[in-house]
Image (cartoon, rainbow, N blue to C red; front, side):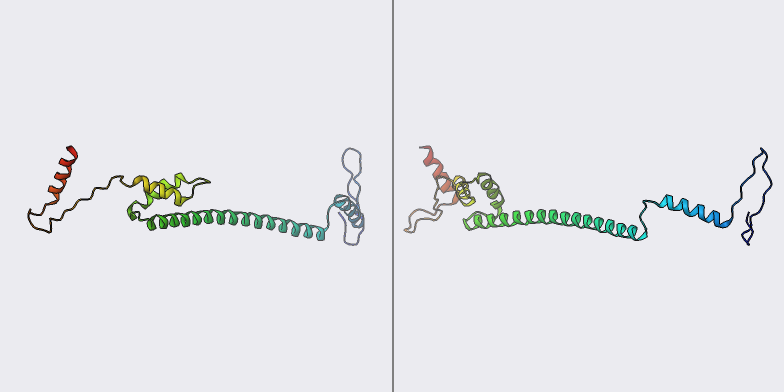
Length: 170
């Protein structure tokens, strides 16, 4: 213990024959200062630590920006691909509708024609091929109206079909 006037206090000797050494406040301060200097040797000071923390935060922020930009880019690519696919679908439907395909059958024709598209065959060519293949080869024209010159009674739809069937059987 040290009194306030920096005089050393004498302590009782300890059992075992050795006396304890007493230090003045100045000696204790000196010892502590030397040990702190030794411990802090090679340690950065506050300014260096602040600069390091700032740099680390900027690096982390840069990484986060790169991650955000990469995610945004990937999302935009996906959305663009979906939009282009929709546009292509609409254009193909428009081509088929212009060629006279029934609106109810357009999806089927788009699907079938798209399977035939190659580097040398365009969608329009494939569509023409599919349309031509789907059209009936022999068109049967049925005159459901009667004769204009009188005579026989006008035929009904059944009579015309029966006549066609009988004619095909002969």
